[in-house]
Image 1 (cartoon, rainbow, N blue to C red):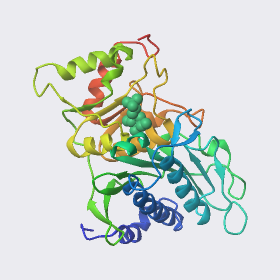
Image 2: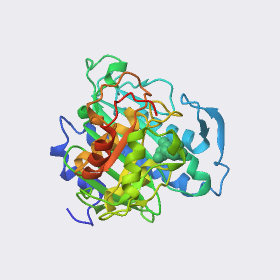
Image 3: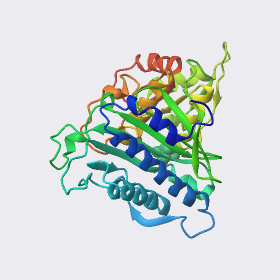
Length: 339
Ligand code: P6P
């Protein structure tokens, strides 16, 4: 494989690595590729057509749904449904999961997908990068029956694939099937993704921290202590603060340059803000496959047993040594400490 390898060629050449797959996972990645190109086209012209601004609805999170949120959700849901590749989908934009029949009207497909169709969408109006995040599991209830909630409430360690699309200065699809992380950049002129970033790895150390310091007074003491550590004049510190307000973009930059992203609990967000199933688990799978790490400040994100579809968790993710430094400060305080 080299930088001339297309995503299509990569999928064919690596079919043997797609766990259990009888071509279903390959077709799923292909459908995500198609949906990514359609959404990318709309994101890139958002300023020109009346697709900006809130759609007038709110999602289950109580957040105003931006029109592009709704559009992106529709595109990914339609793509997965029309191709009858998976047996169920759960989305940040849908209150409940959707059960999808296979071509013969049964429920013969093996995989379920969880997706954040357009993360960071509030950035669209100000022309800042946004992203799509997806997570893929093998169903655990009997094939041939409608999916159940338990098919979606699996630990992150059970993921068979995960990835994101970052709609930035260039559009990239970055994903893993458990054999490392590869980044594909879209050539918009011909609509083809090329293997621009083979075997992506987090540097073990870094000097970038990404956190919304506007919430400082609401942070747990362990986070406050870690931030002070980042800012003191010792060794390769102070670190640099970089916070785009788009998880996918901050994660992507930190994976290339080295860094840590933190969205902790706070008195304003007692469980944190990010959702375990379709934000933290897929990003944690990518991080660990890229020699990084992801924690809730105390334990490995992918070991958390989900209890609700839209549950939130605190999120510390990035260069392994930086996440472990942050955990060291968190460990000084009990997990349920007041702020
Ligand atoms: P805040 C976007 O809404 C998001 O889920 C992440 O992409 C981003 O890192 C975070 O929330 C931004 O949240 O509270 O700092 O604006």
